[in-house]
Length: 46
Image 1 (spheres, helix red, strand yellow):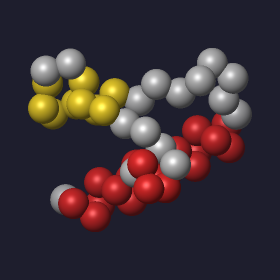
Image 2: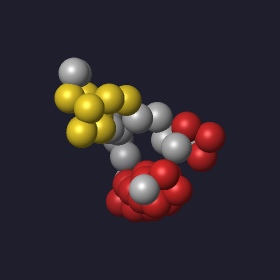
Image 3: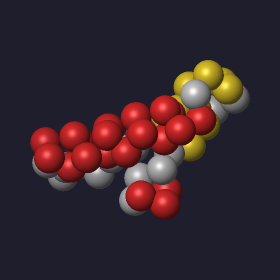
Image 4: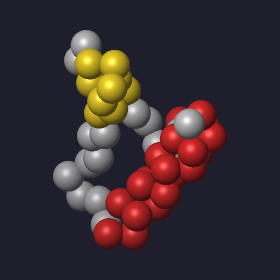
């Protein structure tokens, strides 16, 4: 995901959760783009 512009991280010590922390000023289009990037990343490794 980072290669495509979305930074994610493991959530605390839970290996089954991801943490996404968008900026407070994010548009609907940016949210949709980030979600699509994350989905593609998950599909690649699922």
